[in-house]
Length: 164
Image (cartoon, rainbow, N blue to C red; front, side, top):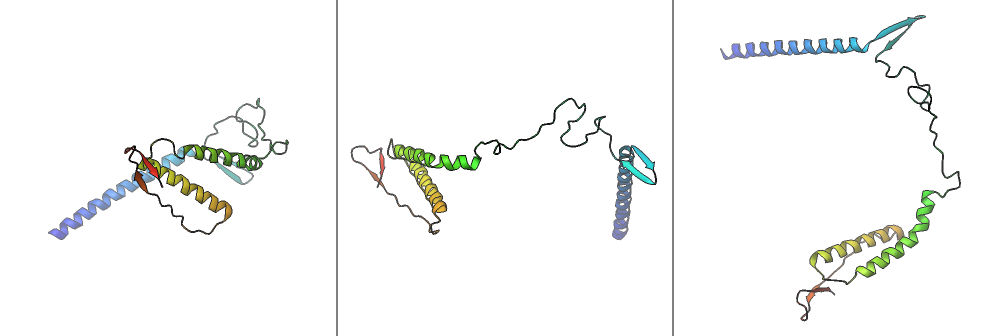
């Protein structure tokens, strides 16, 4: 009895599968018929146009605009040939100035205001990042930098923390 139920269920599943496959095949055929607009045969050559042209005028190349040809083609001009500085040269000239600005900003940040654990962590991250940048620029050996810091409470201001 159980075997008969399995056979009937499998048969129903198989029929359902066949029905789904037939529906899929019919949908694909309908879609293909819609895509095949026309067949042109000329001198034993056959072209199949699979989609409608969106614009009545065909583009001869990528420089020509779509649709009506009243617009001018947009050509890219290499600015380096016009005498302007290249982006690489600009960054190389600006690099020493940026270093000075970073050094000044780091000096101004050093010990102003309260020292909290969060601020110490951010300072440590900035220092590690600077060490990493210097290591990359100078090709230093890849030893892991270690920074030790300690927190001490001042008796004058117990709410302030300082680096040692």
